[in-house]
Length: 145
Image (cartoon, rainbow, N blue to C red; front, side):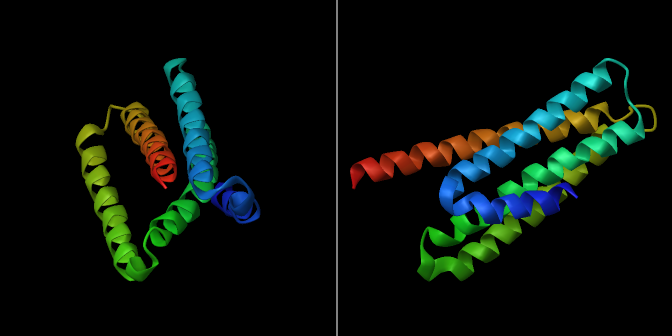
């Protein structure tokens, strides 16, 4: 549900707001949801409905972030769009596989969801920093032109 709504928002506002800002907005929404989920877990409110309910915020953030990230990735050098799509897809699959291995390593029968929540929060914080870095680099390139 969240991803569907995020894609709708992405399609509606990306041209007006800009690809880089939309990626940042999506990442920040995801961090906000994951932070709130971690706080609830630390307060002892850890029910599957709470955990999966907050996955809507991840879906919303990803629905805003991913289409814009893909558009940005493919638009840097249009002549290399095919290579960029392949490399970007490989990074997504490889990154997902690596994070799955890490999640499998840190989760156990008695750990609860907290290690997974922390891992997901850390990766979304990394996404915010990556978006900020891309925005900074874009402003430097624009200033040089």
